[in-house]
Image (cartoon, rainbow, N blue to C red):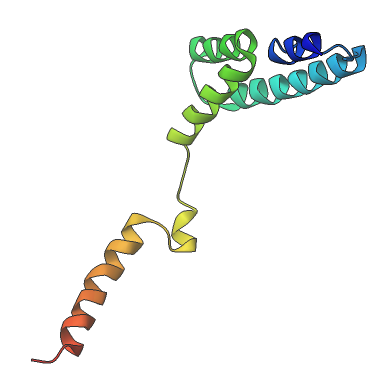
Length: 107
């Protein structure tokens, strides 16, 4: 029983087969291909593209997480205007709502 607890705490899986590792490798390769395709489709300089491809290959999970955060910072959020979630839309509504509140409040 003690050996089972030690294996659990040290993350030694005794029944892990080659198929599990093959599946993990396939998922990693698909994520890597999608990440590299995304990097190569950008209008960045070749040096920056090479840097991001190197990060994605060298740091499999952390590199993808950092690249996703980078994409969020440089993303185009213009579609939010259609949904009414942009800043300019809120700024246009706020003065009108304040004026409506002043007009409806008793003198």
